[in-house]
Length: 116
Length: 113
Image 1 (tube, one colour):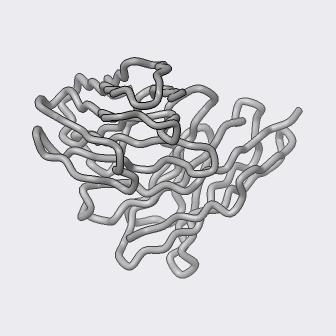
Image 2 (cartoon, each protein chain N blue to C red):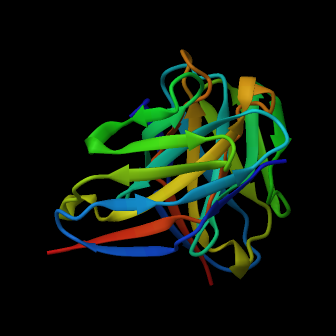
C-alpha cells in the first residue's frame, strides 16, 4: 500500500515570490507520481506527472517538480507565483505499471494562497 | 475535460433516504472512479470500475455501492444516507491513451441533514 504526506496544509506567499510545496510518499513498489491543482469550486486538473526518466518534470503554468527516490519526495516548485496560482494542490501516487488498476492515493492537500 | 459530467451537481437530502449520483463520460474510457473530498482528508477512493460490470472497493467503501451497466455510466448509491456522507463527490476516468492519467469531473456537493 502507498501513502502520501503533504507536509504543509497551508502555504501563504507574496506575489512574484518563489514557492515550494512538499510531498513525501511511501511505497514498497515502484510508483508514478502526480501533482493536481484544484481551483475554488472546480474539479481537479493535472499539473504534472513523473512516470520514468528525467527526475525533473515540467508542467503547466510554470510549475515543475523533482523526483528524489532516495528521499521518497516529489516537491513542487514555481520560481515566481501569481495571484491566479491561489488554489489547493494535491500530490498523488500510483503503483507503477498500473498493477493496482491505476488507482491514485492522494495526500491531504496544500492550500497555496498568493497575496498581493 | 475528457467529456465527464456529474449529476446532480448539488443535492440536499435527509438522513435515511437513498441517493444515487451519476457519472457520465463520452470518450469510452475503461476505468472510472468515485472519490469523496473532505476538508483535511484530501480525496479518498470509494469504489472504482475497470470495465462494464467490473467494480471493486476503495479505501472508504462502507455505506456505498456502485454499478456500471454500460461503459459511459458509473452510478454511486448511498442506500441510506447519513450525515457523515455529507461531502463533495468526484468522478474520474482514466485516459484511453495513457491509463496512468486520471481526468476529473466537476463534482457533486451532497448535504445530508
